[in-house]
Image (cartoon, rainbow, N blue to C red; front, top):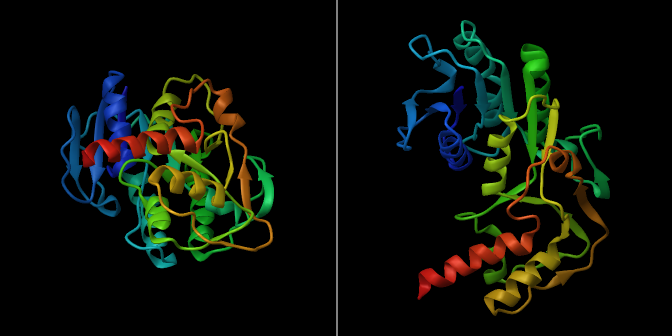
Length: 273
């Protein structure tokens, strides 16, 4: 199968390597030049995409990253890329388009459980653009589109919470958070290519929604620093149900934050020795 990946950032690169290992032909599009073993990497803006000289494409993964967290940047990346991609692929036998969105489209929440059947209620300008983009991509690609909404992505090089603990910044009590390790997100995306039938939507999240202050306390213990101050606050955040992901048969390498961060902390310790 010939797979096209739009966006060879961290997740796109991990996905590309995974797909090559599975024996697929992989072409990747990125704004800047990239070199990934076994991948035909093309430096080209997606808004000016040309694929006439590329072998017939069967699957497409769209993993776009805005330059900044503004509605304008999100529109440019997620909305302005749709028509050029559709035009560039019109002669290709595309069976499936996998569009990576975000769980932010659900809104902030007040501690309730949410899954793929929960209506989006985006409450930030960027989340609103993502929800609009999902709907526009669905209009164009119809039943061939699968949307994946990752929760908070963590993994090597993603040190926001570790830095938070080291800096001793306060955290709110009763704030629910959700996450997925970058290796698991890329692994799940690759695993989708093995399924005979795909759902139109998947939440990509691990099996343990967690209170933020508990995650930070775990990190503080393993970093051997003081716990961050905890501020009294009402229940907030959302708890994402990852059952649909689990029902595909994909086995998470890191089913909860403890296993994922343990690996990261061990790697960091070894590098300091």
